[in-house]
Image (cartoon, rainbow, N blue to C red):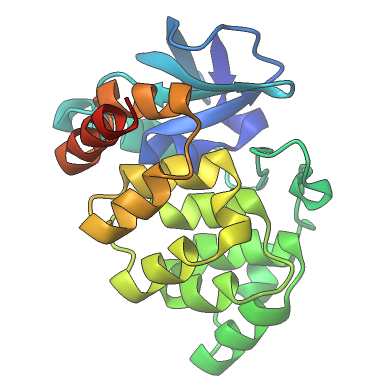
Amino acid sequence: MVLDLGDAALARDLAAGGLFVAGCTLELGVECDLLVRARGDELVVAARVVFVNESGAGLELAERVAELKEQLAALIARAPADEVVTSTYNDEADDATVAKRAPNLHDRLRGLTLVQQIKKAQHGEMSERVVLERIYGKTVWEPLLRNPRVTGPEVARIARMGALPRPMIELIVTNGAWLQIPEIRRSLLSNPRLGTDQILRVLRMLPKHELKLAAGTTGYPHPVRDAAKRLIRELG
C-alpha cells in the first residue's frame, strides 16, 4: 500500500502511530506494508488493520521503535506543507469530509496572540481549526475541543496526543457522543495518560470483538490490555 504524504497529508496521524485509509478493503487483523513517500524519499513501514468500516480501514504501525520514529519524523518533515487534509474516521459524520485550507490560510493564522488563538479555535471553520492545531499544538487543544463544530477526526487526533493534560482527557471521555466514535475510543486507549477509571469507561463502550482485539493490540499500553482481558473474563 502506497501513502504519498504530498497528496494525503496524513503526516500527523502517521507520526502518532496510525492512520485511516479510505477505500482500503483489507480485513481486520491483516498485516501489510506501507510504502511512505515524500518528495522522492521512501520508507517501508509494517502496519496492521485494527478497524474496518464501509469507508475504508484504520491501520496502526506494527513497529514504533525509536529509530523508526526518527525515520518517519525526517520523512514527514520533507513532506509538502501547502496542503492540509483530514481523513474521515466516521462515515456517519457529515462534517468529517476532506477539508483543504485556502493557499494563504497558514500565513494568515500565524502570529496570532494567545487570545486570538483561543477565539479562533473556539469558533473557526474546519480548515482554520486544522491549521491552528498544526501551528500552535497544545495551546489550542482545549478551545478546539470546545468548538461546537469540532469533528470526530479532530477529536481523535487530539485524544491520542501523549502530552494531552488529564483534564482534557476527562473532557473527551465524559462526552458520550464522542465515545460512540470508534476512532476516538482507539485514540484514547492508545494514550498512555489515560487513567484507570477512564480506561474501564472506554473499554465498556467496545463491542465484544473490539474488546478482544484491544486485549491483544500491542500498540495499546499494558494497563489497557490488562484491563481488557479482565473485562473479557468478567463478561464470560
